[in-house]
Image 1: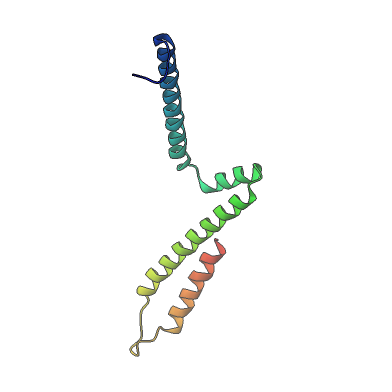
Image 2: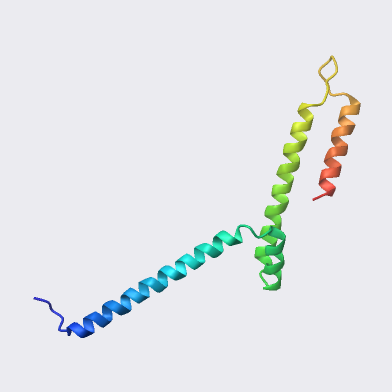
Length: 113
């Protein structure tokens, strides 16, 4: 026998309230998940601008650092790919002309950051 004394009507009301609460939580969770997915398509520079407008300067700085790191990694990958294509002279050293080309490419890419 139950230790609680409650009417069937009150029990039905409690169950209904709890069911509604669960549905509201699920709706909220679905909305949050949808927003998170939509946020992935927002360009980072717009996210930084919004953070700055909201006063989240630390978040904006972290995002900018991440963007710069990603750009630097892309430049590094491009330079490595281009170095693999650089012609070598017979001694195995990279020619002065090739070094100049590599330096120019690095300088140009770093200016774009």
